[in-house]
Length: 190
Length: 281
Image (cartoon, rainbow over all chains, first blue to last red; front, side, top):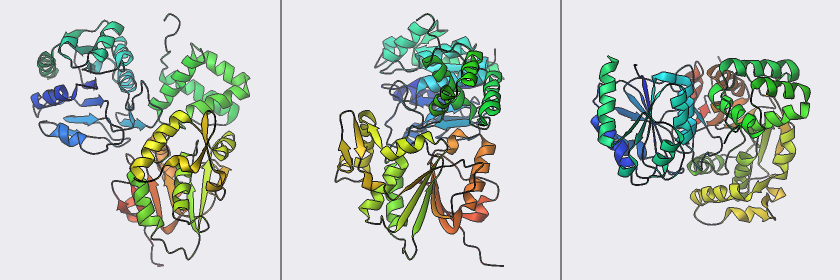
């Protein structure tokens, strides 16, 4: 199986893990990575910069209809939902919040699952509500690979536990093992 | 949870729906951004208990009022007053305050399904005491929206978000000062929007409603596909005076072919552009 896209969802307690993942992936890691992280809706600036400090990959907040390229990390902008269109570009929306969240992980994951099918890897990290559980189930149903961070390791377990009860996930792993798995899957990809 | 599963639609399902709406009601949704529209139709089907697109099409074809309901639900109307407070402050300080007002300033807010952008703008106009020097025109696709936008009754839940945005727009004062608190809602004081013109209009098929000094078109093109977006920008350009301004959403781009020959950037972060005045050849 060759995976081509990675989508990561998280909220409370996930920032450090996301930073670690981005710091551990090499510059030649080609799969585009989509980050759907709950964040303060009115704070526009600073998040990309904070994630970029240790990242070897370029982190951007995409504009609407921006084409998706390899070697890039796409962070869902504050106060917008992030979709994936069939022409392989990003679609943003200001539709109402889902699970009190905009961006909503369910919306992004379900859209990515539909567009990328079995080429997608979905990862749920630490978080304080159940957003993402439905989205991850859609990735599984569409043949993608589902990974959840081990709740024992999470600062807040609600999101990972909800994801595990909604879906028969492929892997429940500690953050370091998630990184090792991504590196292995990337190498297989060549 | 049995029987409550959301139906996931395919491309052919969406195409069938578009064709039916076009044939029966002459509404063309085929150039809307597919992913978000698909998701809204799926939510609509879930909420109204349809398990297949054929069932939905059958209902819509046989019941015109149900079609209106569908249209209302799938056209996005979720916005906030004072969304992006930095944008509204920039507009107030750099454009509305600096204009010389030798002539009435004409502003167009096209393709609105709800009134939040209008209410925000009109409150700023009142703050500046410019209500007799600025004329705002809001156009909306569905005639059903006109009454709702004019009534300006906002849910309490939405007002909480609006008030939080307002606090970031200006430190003093309270948005609720412009409203009357009713049982389950807040009603905007009617004098705030009494000068505004609110009309039904299809951007893509009707004549443009005038030539304007400023067009506010934020977060509307998110719901168009790339070709409809270009069509929209070309039409809006014909409704904009040379030297006039256009504002789009802070995550949108003004990128129809040749736009950089016609516009200069006034604010990159707030996405405000000025139409270049060409010397007569």
